Image 1 (cartoon, rainbow, N blue to C red):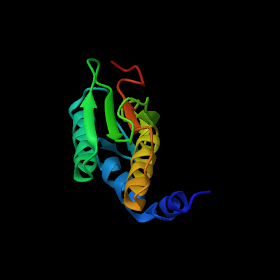
Image 2: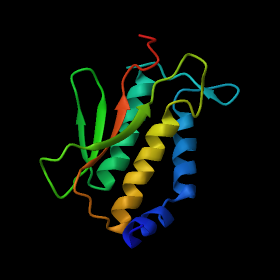
Image 3: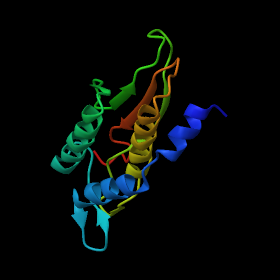
Image 4: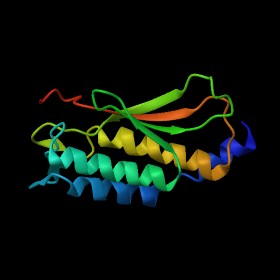
Amino acid sequence: MREDFLDAVHRVDQHRLWQRHMEMAQIGAIPGSGVNRAAFSKEDIAARKLLISWAQARNFTVAMDAIGNLFIRRTGTDPHAAPVMTGSHMDSQPRGGRFDGIYGVLAGLEALEAIEQAGVKTRHPVELVAWSNEEGGR
């Protein structure tokens, strides 16, 4: 394995990832450590804004499509290369678990940040997607 990729693995910050999970778990928190973050609700929008702020702090490109899917991109060296993608959803069922969906989003953001901090050059962009309305509650 290339040294820069090994460096990226070591830059995954478990504390930052946990803190972000706990911060997201407060948005739409319900008794019993779950969340209620229905798609397109004020809670869902607040969670998306928080995610966007973390992405913009790293100068990642942020875009949203016509149906509300959120894309966070770390640029590659080839502007025409298709992105390598990871992701999940941020919305929840009315009594969703605090890690349902959001874990995949935050783990993806942590991976992008670790790659960036390690200075890894990738030909393809690496992109995180937060799918909208995955739970189908709206």
